[in-house]
Image (cartoon, rainbow, N blue to C red; front, side, top):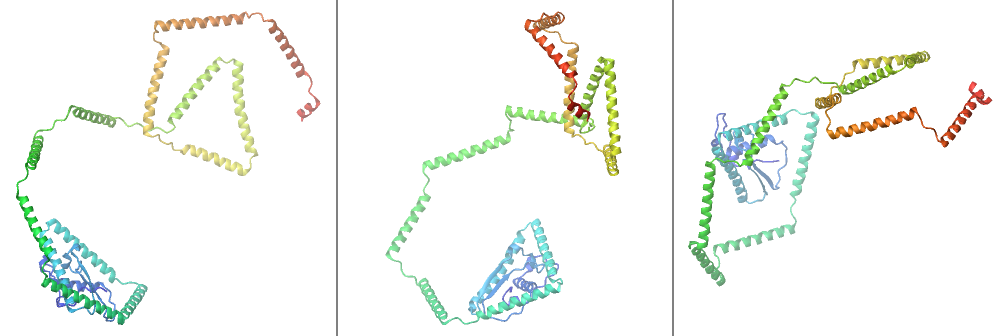
Length: 489
């Protein structure tokens, strides 16, 4: 357990009354601090009855922190704790000076706190008082939590632990009461007598110091002469070189100070390059502001679905396919057109027939789940929410499409009304066209009047005709009986 102070007359005296109107630390005293500390320690520490012993006493002198509103003015930095151990057989002088040291420590602490408060500014004093109030409030909360009723189990085990600790402490104190062995007592007493003898010799030497030796007297005279020489050297004027460089450094420092003062008075003019880049930054900032204003004034673009461009491409491909189909149908003979349309109708009818046959051969469960799947797919198609395209992708894609469309338009205009060719380009173009026309005329003439075949060509033509006749005869012959059987089967 911790004891706040020895039971001195100052500590036993009642603490000075702390009234609500007290605002100065001057009304505190050492006795009040000691009494408040004792009461705080007694209130905070659990009460455990222990037997008296002659063991060394652990004495702790502690200044209070939050037990009393006025004593709590002493900050945590000024709190001092003294851990002093006193044996029961300690001399009276040791006990006296120990108590005196504790009281002096408390008095010095209060004096330092008083000086600190006197030198504090108003804001520091305010926040200091606020800190102390918070500490008092916290201590009150902790005390309330300590004094709050606890469950019976916790009370039981807490008391049991405290009793066990007190028993262990009592056993330790009883074990320490056993007198030391004779040998320990003998050597301890011998060491104490030797220590007292040496202390008496030291005191005697201090009171009647022996005369110094001849060597000591000699070196003392040498040191005195050396001190006189050093003092004379310090009083002598400095050499010319040191004076020169000292004055030079002083002049240089003064010149620099004048230059700094002049530069502060005259406004600084930046270089041409710095002015150029500054103007560039200003111009760039103005352009950015103009662009921002344009963006703000621009109308909001309606967001497009994420598959907008895909569908647009599909529509363009479908339009091209339709135009190609219409062109092919316009050039197609009537019979081919008739049978092509009939083939498409027959394909649709065949698919419908296949679907009906599939539904007829379905079981009831299969038909049920098939109808449910079709209904779910139709509902999902109707309720599907189209994802919106990101604004950045939409912006740059639309700009790219506009640029491409512009280029296509220029190409179409150039095809419709080509620009006039240069003389060199026209010469070679006309030459190439004339060559192509000549080659086409030759090919057409060869088709109309083919040249007579060569001897080898006539021979292979006859061979091919004979081969065709053989193949035709083989195809007209009746098939073998096995092939006919399996074919019929």
